[in-house]
Amino acid sequence: MIYLYTDFGYEGPYVGQMKAVLARRAPEVPVVDIMHDAPVCDPKRAAYLLAALAQQSEFGDVWLCVVDPGVGSERLPVVLDCGGVTFVGPNNGLFELIHRRIDGATLGQITWQPDMMSATFHGRDLFAPVAAWTAIGEDVETAVIDPAEPRPGVDWPDDLAEIIYIDAYGNLVTGIGGSALTDDQEIEGAGRTLKYARTFSDVPEGKLFWHRNSMGLIEIAANRARANQALDLQAGDSIVIS
Image (cartoon, rainbow, N blue to C red):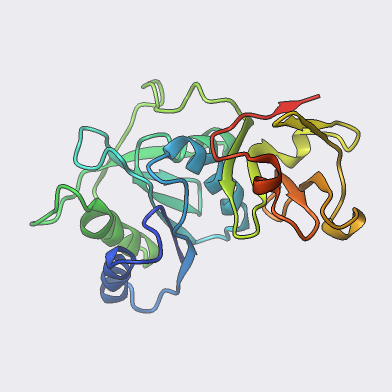
């Protein structure tokens, strides 16, 4: 299947325009809108979220990913081949966490270009056709990028002690992998010290805690309450691990 991961939002024409290209070029391949409210114009935080979501991939899957504040600039359009799962999008650090975690992953510059391409919508004109062709097994013109070349995001930490996303329930998703903490560790945020709980119902109503969410990331939450409001934390705010 083809997964769509963007910061486009769910309003406006942009998602629909990309899906129209996919439907024309790969009509038999299912397309899944995995997320269109990725961190806006923020490849760094979006990279940690993408790496967590991509763990559900199966052989043959293609991820069409567009968090691309540098669209139209000299940043490269790329394909990241992870040996059966492929990522298509901008080379701005969005794929960095996946690249470093997958042995043998190779990064290639997309050299094919359409006859007409908008300077501001490579998602529709460049990335969507490439994703579609990849999904149906057609070759795409690429040039291998030297692994010794510095990559955007190569200096980012393996675990990011920041809030990277706030979901519809007010839960605060961090860029820290669940295996990075033990159950007896505490998290400090906005002057509060939070202990671990396995799930929401393990704490009293309204109580704040941290847990390992369904994506495998450390998350700050509250039972039947909004953690973001209780702590007045926003995306980008730092947290401290005891």
